[in-house]
Amino acid sequence: MAIHVVLLEPEIPQNTGNISRTCVVTGSVLHIIGPMGFSLSEKQVKRAGLDYWKDLELHMYDSLEEFYAQNPAAECWYFSSKTSRNFNEASYGGDCYLMFGKETKGLPKELLDQHRDHAVRIPMQEGQRCLNLSNAVCVGVYEALRQNDYFCMK
Image 1 (cartoon, rainbow, N blue to C red):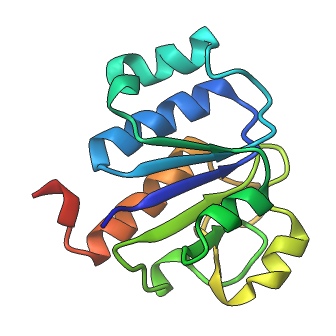
Image 2 (cartoon, rainbow, N blue to C red):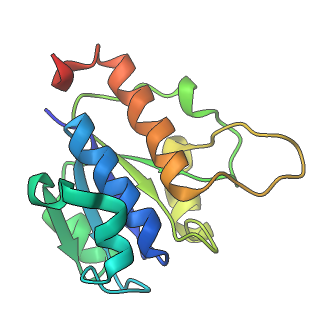
Image 3 (cartoon, rainbow, N blue to C red):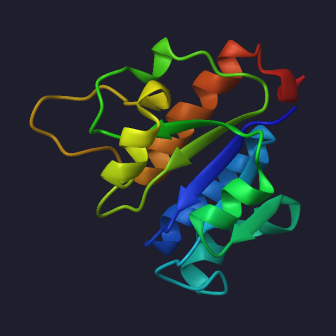
């Protein structure tokens, strides 16, 4: 069992570095769907992830279609500020996939429309756009872990 973090076309290397560190310390798996707005060899990614990269379980995909083909049984939850169901109202299984969109646009509307029953949001103040991506990932991961009694941290 593992929590899976899925980043769809991430754009900011520091966010991906921070997310990789969150994945390592929580026992989560990181999936990155390209194209990315940077290279994983960039120093900002490595600096943000510090020495955690060697312990990261990382899977890379060229497209969303490739991700779905390689993970056909994935229980995906789609995090977006463009939906109404709060993230803590969802029931996350021990092998759930938490998907997050690119920093500037989030997840595509078409994807959210196709998966409306699994689209969730993190509540925030009216009129504010969204949390930083790495912070949003952390919120989602810890809620999934809490619901599963922190199974990978015992």
